[in-house]
Amino acid sequence: MEVYVRGARSSTRDWLAAQRVPSNELPKLDDEQKAEARRGNIREEAFARTVYAQQLTGQATLHRLLAFGRWLEAEIEGISPGSKIDSVELTTWDGMLHIQGKNGYDAFSFDLNEDLVERFLTTGAADLESAILRVAEIFVPRDRVAKAS
Image (cartoon, rainbow, N blue to C red; front, side, top):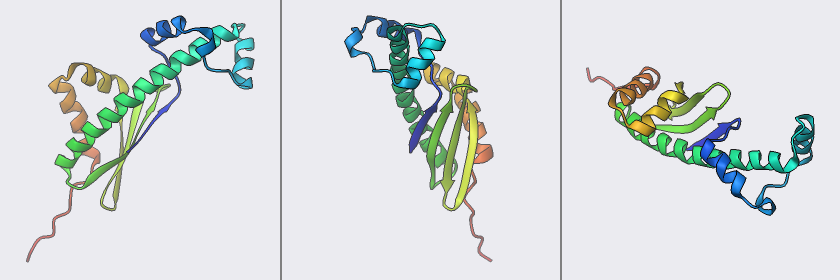
């Protein structure tokens, strides 16, 4: 299963952690990032701290999405045996997760609201689980059973 995060953001916790990192441990900015810092009238070190915070949040987000994807794949397997999730992609600017997978030769894809998934991951609430699985049931093809005549 592939997991992607398109876009960047940082959490308060990661931003605070980035403020404590020694400047020699910050990522080196490329020319484009340096130009962006100049355009925003931001010191390069401050910009590097922002980039570092975004990297920390991005890694944590990837781990959470992978865990969610594995859970969702197991649940989808119960809905439609043989189904597999190929990718989970979060697009940060629209707050949507795009799920793609296959059941045999039938491909499926659907979107989930990031806030819904995040609330489920932090609360484990049954109503949120039901909402996620209801969306999956709509889009994941069921196994076709051959009928004997």
